[in-house]
Length: 291
Ligand SMILES: Nc1ncnc2c1ncn2[C@@H]1O[C@H](COP(=O)(O)OP(=O)(O)OP(=O)(O)O)[C@@H](O)[C@H]1O
Image (tube, protein in one colour):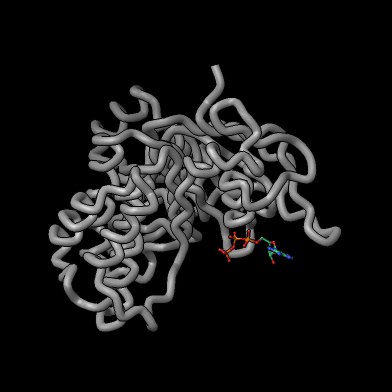
């Protein structure tokens, strides 16, 4: 059975430049994907293949097992949310959501307005009178309320203030539980987004170097802290990447997983083991890929 979105050895060249190379991905309904890559890695280009704005130079893109390129019915399944400029928009979110509902029947205006109220955003206020962060939140909420089977957020939450962003992520998780879809958040930085993702995809220099469930991804590294000599003994033979000392406490970042025996030893030695953040692992993995 095919996934909702399938890319098979997809490559994209623009003006003789390789923008994407040999990308194979399977994206399922009901899951939230974190697509991470440095600026210029090719994230937007990859998303534009999924949204059928572009056709791969080689390989295939399929939605529901079919080629979506110039297939209006399939293209309509995708909602691509990117940054918008509301500086000149005198309309209110209420007006825009009612209008949107008219030409996009799946768009749920009441749901949009309820979510905006939950974020403390006044739906009767003109968009150009809102802060940039609030404008970004309205844009993102409209993306959720579109109820599209494939919903893409391309760097749209960065500008939101932290609390608003956190509330929006909660709403995104709820929206996906309420109406399961394939949701993709693309970003060059994912601090504070760990709890949002079901799966991580890392794009590095035109290639997908990893796609895996968040739990497995987080097993790729850990931090162990405690008395210096105990930390040193515990990590002997492990792939230690960095060490941080604060008074008598040593904290070491290790690439690799810990098994039950390691955890038992750590406990006996009064060592504290914690997972790394997605952002930390992303930075480590993209910096050490050559090694
Ligand atoms: N229309 C185009 N013509 C020429 N080069 C392009 C075009 N679109 C993208 N590129 C190049 O492709 C590469 C990937 O761009 P893309 O926007 O997909 O990256 P990104 O990971 O989304 O980066 P950012 O986080 O900065 O948006 C960049 O080097 C960019 O300059």
